[in-house]
Picture 1 (spheres, rainbow, N blue to C red):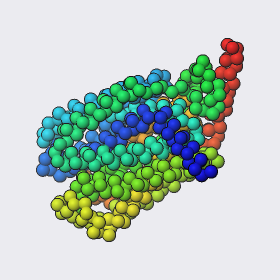
Picture 2 (tube, helix red, strand yellow):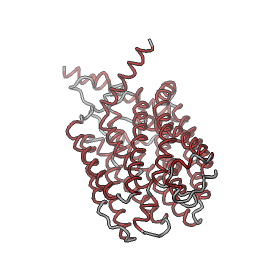
Picture 3 (tube, rainbow, N blue to C red):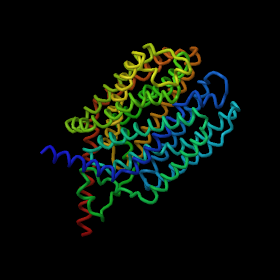
Picture 4 (cartoon, one colour):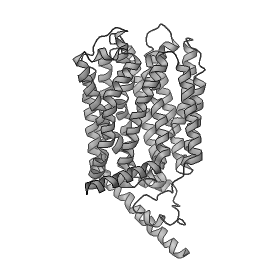
Length: 476
């Protein structure tokens, strides 16, 4: 019996991949490129201002403002995703992103503010494109996955993201550390354009609403289409509900915590007296972070789906648990003694493991990546369950918008506080975590209304199913 069950599970996962490969392809692009500048943040600062200390203020503004652009472009993509082909939006954003990377490869080096603005403007082009990745992927996935397999989809998505992000970090670190950053940007840009062409030739657009259990039967008829469009009444009755509003606004604070590993932790361990090289940093996160990412994304996906089937509130409680644990772990990470290394020692990966503290740090990184999975695989399905098919794009883009506002604001605040307090990472991380913990409190409020709001959506869809069936019968 166990062999039969295993075989069925394998077929189900293969089917998921076949149905959703364009979404996975887009996420591979996003994962490979997202950490390219973060993992090499000190090198990038040196490319702009050779021989000068880390310009945390300027780099923080660069990352923060480009994140704002991504947030606003996400709103545009979200509205488009609810009306037009998600496949075509994938293609446009991939190609535009590739162009941004290729142009960036021609940036002059060592020119200070001139180099900074070249990187900044190319970053604007890339984030204008990347703003569409999440809302279009979520809209595409909403119409390609059943409700009971959504955590599994997001689990595979996050595991793939963790794997390819790690590969991207290592590759970019090798290129940047050896002064081949231009070649890296040109190669990445070309890959993005190739991905766009593959999606153009091979991807298929899913039928809207067909995976909702209330509509599956009636929409299985090829002649019946989901005709409902977003309007003011829908916005008021389904989007502006207590759970939606709470989940949307909590993202501002939660993303402050989730952005800490990239913007604070990486320059912290790469700066004196620790002096980790970008390549060693990448390898460290690969060995300890990657297994945690897989455990959090895959091992707990089916568990989350089963708990949610009993009560959707369980997803909320898993998210609160995730945020609280991350808060504690990051406080510990910034207050434990990392080994002091020379610049040469910081390039030798094997020297690190002679220090017992590194094993403790590794365990904390593994644990944090695992726990982060609870947030990543439970938050998107909640939004899908409490919103209608025609609002999936706009709601996911609004969610991304506020999360990116939080992430961008967090980076700007962190960079400013870091400079004001003379690069005191412990104080800066404490300030940022204090702001971020507010997100967990917002989620607890969401638990109060979530069942009522989910049932409202189910009732509307049952009513629409009956309407579509009646129309089909009349036409028959």
